Amino acid sequence: MRIDPKGTVAGHPALLVRRTLRRLRTRLQWGLDELESAASLEVGKGRALIKALAAEGLIEAAGRDAWQVTQAGQTLSAATAAKRVTRATAERTLQGFLDRVEQVNNDPYFLWQGNPGGSLWQHAETRGRAVE
Image 1 (spheres, helix red, strand yellow):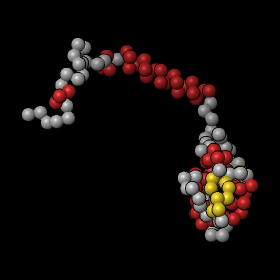
Image 2 (cartoon, one colour; image 1 turned 45 degrees about the horizontal axis):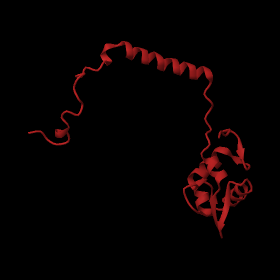
Image 3 (cartoon, helix red, strand yellow; image 1 turned 30 degrees about the vertical axis):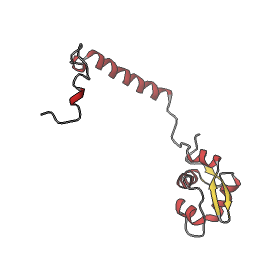
């Protein structure tokens, strides 16, 4: 899910709502104080946010003065606000990677110089202990 970093959710900045839900989603239940702390709101300013989030279905009552994040709230808390990667950027990045792969494949420095007939485990009995 993507969110507009300049957009709003329930009348509040989308990034503020996402950050608040991220901080609260790991708790089974939380109250007004925890919400105000998670949202960096002044004491007494969280009730409007609780009403707005509940109206949007992002939180639900979990008892008297207790709330919990809903599945929709979990989804929003995991949303990204990053810009999409353009096709040009993706193709440029992929081509750079393929160029590096070709360089490694053509450079003898990266060839393995081990014993082709030997076993990596031939000294397994001494591995992990001091050799006398």
